[in-house]
Length: 450
Ligand code: ADP
Image 1: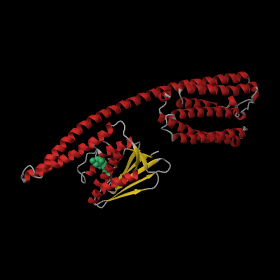
Image 2: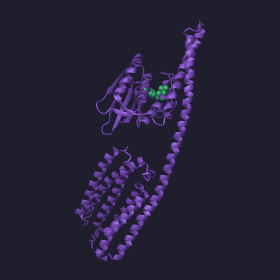
Image 3: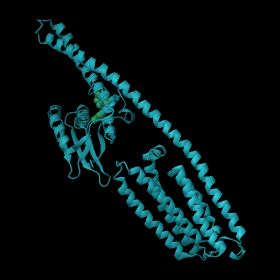
Image 4: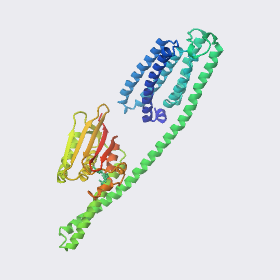
C-alpha cells in the first residue's frame, strides 16, 4: 500500500483510469470503422465475425469497467480504494492485451501492420501501473503472443494470412520469419517499458518533490498566519479599550467637553471603529488560514440560509432592499463547520447589501445539481456590479474594485479572500458573474453530505 502511495498520486491515478476508459470507447469505435472499412470498402477478405465479436467484447467489458469504476468512485474515502483501483487498472491492461492478441490472431498475426499497437499498451501500462506491474504486462504479452505465434508457425494453430496487407502468401512464411519477428516484437516491448518507466519515474519523483515543496510552503503560510493572528488579536483588544474610552468621553461621563473637541473625538471614534472592523476581518482570515483541520458535521443549507437571512433582514430593509431566499426540495446537506459557513454567507450577503443601491433586490438560491453530487448556492443582487478588469482580482487579499468608493468608502478587501478560503476548506468552488450597473451573482458549489 505504501509503495503504491509513493508511486501513485491518487487524484492523478483517478484521472488516468477515467482517461483510459474514455480512450477505450474511441478504440472500440476505431476498431469498428477499420473492420467495416477493410471488409466492405477495401473488399479484403477478413474474419469479420471473429473481429466483430472481439469488438463487442471490448464494448461490453468497457461498460462493466465504466460502471464498476463509478461504484468505486463513491467509496473514494475508503482506505482500500487505491488498492482496488490499482487492481482494476492491472486487470484492464491484461484484458486489453489479451483482446489485442485475439484480434491479431484473426487478422494475420505477426503480419498485421497494427502489431505496433502493443507498444501503445506498454506506454499506457508504464504510465498507469507500478514499474513491476508494467514489466509483468510486457511478460504476459510476450507469453500469450508467443503461444499464438509459436502455434501458428508450428502448425497447431491456424495462421490467418492477411492477404490484402502483405505480399506473397502464407506458404512463404517459414519458422525463421516467425522467430525473427517474434524476437524483434518482445524486445521492443521490454525496451518500450524500460524507456517509458525511466521517464515516468523521473516525472513521479519531480511530482513528489513539488508536493513536498508545496506542503512546506503551506506550513510556512500557516506559521505566518498564526503570527498575524496573535498580532491582530492584541490589536483588537487595544482597539476595544480605545473605543470604550472615546465613547465615555463622547457621552460626557468623563465631564463636559467643547463642541470642537466632541467633533474631533467623534471622528477618532469613527476611525477606530473602521480600524476595529479591519482588524477583525484580518483576525478571522488568519484564524481560518492557521487552522490545519476544521471540525465538520452535517449542515442543512436551507435552514442555515434562513437563519442568516433572518439576522440580516433588518439591515437590508434599513437600506431599502428586498432580501429573498429561494430553496429547492431535494438533497440539501453538506459536511461543514456551521459557524464558519454562516460567517461566509454573512460576508457575501453583507457585500450585496453594501453594494446595492436603495430599491434593489438580493436573491439567495440553493439546490442540488442533478447527478453531480453538488449543492449549489447562489447570491445575486441588482447592485453596482464589478468592472471586468477587477473581476479576476476580487478574491485577492486587500483588493477593492474602483467603483465601490462612491457607495462604501470603508472596507478591508479581505471579506472575499476569507469566503474563498472557507469554500476551499469545504472542498467547494466559487465563481462570480457581474455586469456594471446591473448586478452580480456569486455562485458556490459544495460536495453534498454522504
Ligand atoms: P470589502 O471589504 O471591500 O467589501 P471584500 O473582500 O468583501 O472587501 O470584497 C472585495 C471587493 O469585491 C469589494 O471591494 C467590491 O469591489 C467587490 N464586491 C464584492 N461583492 C460585491 C457585490 N455584491 N457587488 C459589487 N461589488 C462587490
